[in-house]
Amino acid sequence: MNDFTRAVGVEVPLICGPMFPCSNPELVGAVSKAGGLGIIQPLSLTHVHGHRLREGLQLTRRLADGKPLGLNALIESSSRAYHRRIVESVDVALEEGVRFFVTSLGKPDWVVERVNQVGGLVFHDVTDRRWALKGLDAGVHGLIAVNRCAGGHAGHKSAEELIDELGDLGVPLICAGGISTPAGFANALGLGYQAVQMGTRFIATDECRVSDAYQRAIVEAREEDIVLSERITGVPLALIRTPYVERMGLRAGPVARWMLRGRRRKRLMRLVYAVRASRRMKRASLDERGGQELWQAGRSVAGIDAILSAEEIVRQFAAATPTSAVE
Ligand SMILES: Cc1cc2nc3c(=O)[nH]c(=O)nc-3n(C[C@H](O)[C@H](O)[C@H](O)COP(=O)(O)O)c2cc1C
Image 1 (tube, helix red, strand yellow):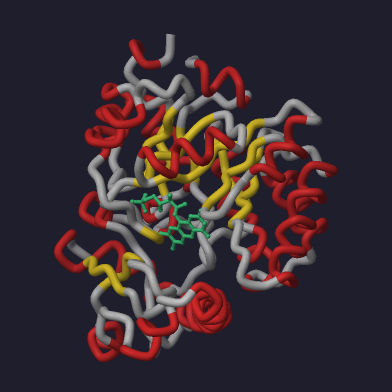
Image 2 (cartoon, rainbow, N blue to C red; image 1 turned 90 degrees about the vertical axis):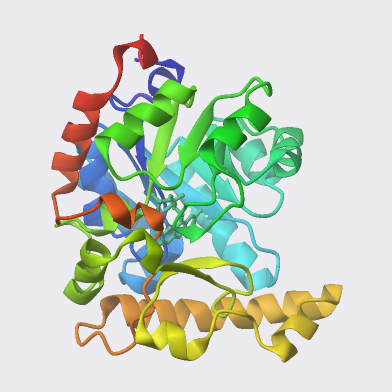
């Protein structure tokens, strides 16, 4: 055990990170049941996998055998309706017994305020010290250091640079990005991280409900096949280079770039991106014909050569946990 596993009540310092559109109750629940920590992505749960929020949370909890779960609050201020949905998801999760929250983007102070009332924990996604200080200012209890190898919105620093930069802040640090093997996990814990958050590795699992074509693409991709594209959300998003992605190009178009410059225009553009991206990614990840090949994955594809069960992954990583990291 280490401070993280003790505080959260899990056996293995391994998190299945939130993934829009890949987090489904079967995957999230299986990771927690096996002793890791599954994080629910509320928009993926409802918008992609068709569950009503409360029922989906309850289903995930049953699949997790009652073990701890987390919830992602992606704080995005581009629309009031979206903000209301996020606030609702945090409130319902607290009512349903969730005590661990992963916040990304924005200012997480309102999440911290609610979670502190029940003695839970908020860990904030950061890519450098400036964002870490903002998160700490809002009262978060730990930081998820998103490095440049991460799937989703990648950071711009290495795992080593981030531990140097954030190591003196006095809160637990979690490593996110580039890890898909037990050896990589052990190495991150050896660097001083309290836990590892993985995304890409968990997409290639029996429990993840994305299409076979997407899972096969992850197994077959090499590190060089991962590109960062601004075309989907306006900021670099890690994707597998496919003919579809090549046709689209990687840089935001001139109109989008102009829109992203002014403060009010930027809000509007981000709203356009959010709506368009969520539709496209939902369609592409579930489509068995593989016609749209818009598949998110990080450079950790390099270490993935088979589809495994989530339980098997947690078991392999548990066995690789260095004793020095968990005493
Ligand atoms: C397909 C995909 C979708 C993601 N969606 C989200 C998300 O909705 N919210 C979030 O905070 N992080 C998101 N992430 C980031 C992951 O939670 C995690 O930090 C990251 O995948 C770690 O890097 P790895 O893929 O190399 O393991 C996503 C990652 C992937 C691969």
